[in-house]
Length: 255
Image 1 (cartoon, rainbow, N blue to C red):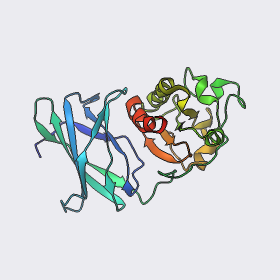
Image 2: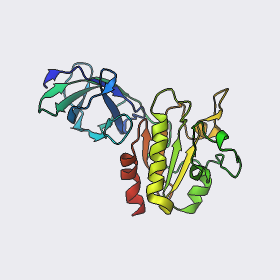
Image 3: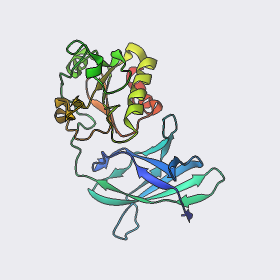
């Protein structure tokens, strides 16, 4: 490893269940995104002093997002806390170290790859004509409130389902995720269904919509699920999601 870095790693995903999972993180230089990193390699090691890596690989950068972030797809078979040794390569060829810790849980509480999620009867414009009650966002796109999940599962088309509260998020990640969903919807058109489910049923009391419990979700931070034409989950994202990363997950299902 190279010299110790002033760059901090902020983990921005949380669905880390034993097996294969998506690990997402931002690289920060003070309050700003680090803009001089060209590559990141990772090793996941026990935190008890044993340095034998259980997984190693490279991360992918997504800079088509309000705050650039990186992702990797590690495999860790055992729940617990794990060290992540990150080697960052700068644009002048230097390598520097910036390590962090992640928690891996035994299993995910939400639908996993291969599952068919609940056929939810989420609110749509047909049942709630006032867009302001369907989203906490400033300018909701009506196209995202046309179908229930149950409707989409019966249509036999790939579907993107986003649980996002753009106006009431605890972090800055939510509104841009909804923007990514809407952008990809505009690019693929009728080839797939797109559904936004607002996390909160009551914007004053901040009570969760019933679909949150149905899907095993318990945080107001963003979740996005991609379903194939058979209704099976083929990708799931917690935290930031750029248009390019979503498109990469959806495009093979519609081509």
